[in-house]
Amino acid sequence: MNFESILLPGIDPKRPLVISGPCSAETEEQVMATATQIAANGIKIFRAGVWKPRTKPGGFEGVGSEALKWLQRVKRETGMYTAVEVATEKHVYEALKFGVDILWIGARTTANPFAVQEIADTLRGVDIPVLIKNPVNPDVELWVGALERLYNAGITRLGAIHRGFSSADKNVYRNIPQWHIPIELRRRFRDLPLICDPSHIGGKRNLILKISQQAMDLNFDGLIIESHIAPDEAWSDSAQQVTPLALKEILASLIIRDTVQTTEDLSVLRGQIDEIDNSLLELLSKRMRVSREIGQYKLEHGMPVLQTVRYDEILKDRAEQGEKMDMSGEFVKKVLENIHEESVRQQLVIMEKAGK
Image 1 (cartoon, rainbow, N blue to C red):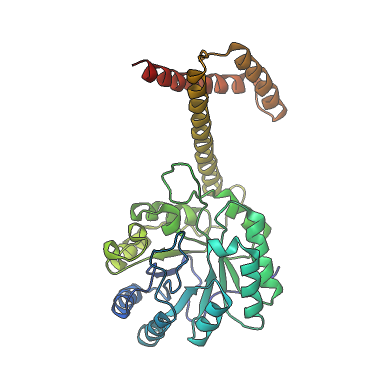
Image 2: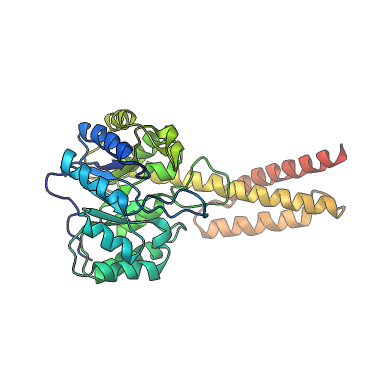
């Protein structure tokens, strides 16, 4: 696929491209106050949620088309471009009718090929930048499929937004970054603009700077950060939004490395190591959870914690497997011995608690 630039007239091509605004357009006053301060910081693209797809019914689901009039006023009075999320044919028609400049497709919509195809068909023949968020589950093929559907409809001004992936396990992030997935997307489509959404990855405003810096170190092209005039009073996702002043400080703190990154660039390689280490810890956490469930089963069935035969089989099998994967069998054995020791400790805790 050959992509055209998503940059609009007057947008500085220097990294990072910044898109900012509130999670939701709540009132005209809130939208204008936030937009005015963001524009004063030099940001050229204003985002706001008009239609809000919520996980469960009953939450604030957006003002709807009425808010598009407020975005028109933002354009008129601040000179900023506007960007909104669309999920249906009606959303697309409404956004285009009110002169929205950039559309994005949300994670839940990307996960639904029928919805993506509907949007693609509606946009056929329209020249407008479209940004596609990764699907909620870590599936690069589903992400690629969404891009292909838009591209096949004649939309060539495409970009991707990385907002992390949902997980049922406890984690410091709202959505686990799994940086290797957008890195794989970039490997396949080297000229595809990549934008990071640290607000949704972190879920907490104190994580936004760290995640934004990681994205810059991984050579992302831009950031989409949620900013609200009064974040604690926001009607949706209050914890992950920052004030326009805090946004200014975050952007000023970023270190932008403009050197051409190659396989020899340590910032990229170290970023991959950090991501792999995080994945290892997450997998170990899952393994310990299963070990605790096994410990509970042993307790209920009067079984001892240590199962020597099973342990010996694991050590032998995994060491052989490790050697086939270009690792020392002794190294793999040491790693597994430590993992097993922690598993036994956690199962003993279950036994001890039951004995009290």
